[in-house]
Amino acid sequence: MAATKTASKTSSKTSAKSAKKPASKTARKNQRAAAKPADAIKFLKDDHKEVKGYFKQYEDLEDEGEKQALADKICLALTVHAQIEEEIYYPATREAIDDDDLLDEAEVEHASAKQLIAEIQAMKAGDRLFDAKVTVLGEYVSHHVEEEEKEMFPESRDSDLDLKALGVMLAERKAELMAQAGK
Image (tube, rainbow, N blue to C red; front, side):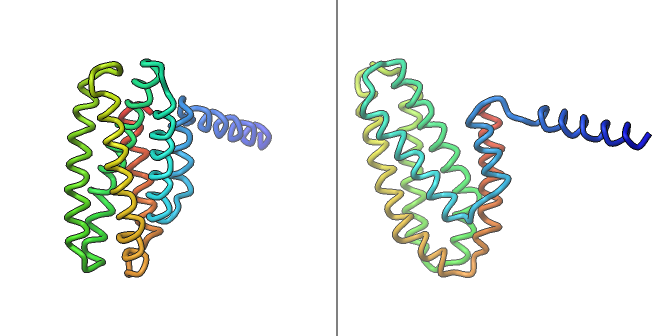
């Protein structure tokens, strides 16, 4: 009977594991990230690096289908990233550091990026200005990332923010938003 219980436990663990495994590579990556989160700054920097790579890849593409798919990926990644920053990181940072101007600028930069994202999502690759809008979005994001990484992140690190706990919250929320998007 003990062997049956052990076998039953093992098979239920196995089926529970396989039942929980997300289908897509991106979903599995997000699930792993949520399971072992970095601190908030490392987490956000990793997002920045990923999106920067997408923009670099976009520059080399010529096929409209590939451009469309990558532009869609960029728009989703930036939308989710902006949302988790606005819901979690910015409010916590606003309370922890004394630099409202920096956070106000970041919010305005997000609004500009969101406007461009909406315009890109309303277009198709090959449309006049599509490539230009993706390029300008990349430039906006590059400027925004530089300010966050050189100004805001160091101020956050020097504050009393619990960056590990914030990292957990960011990772969990990102995984949730990506799951809602089907990624």
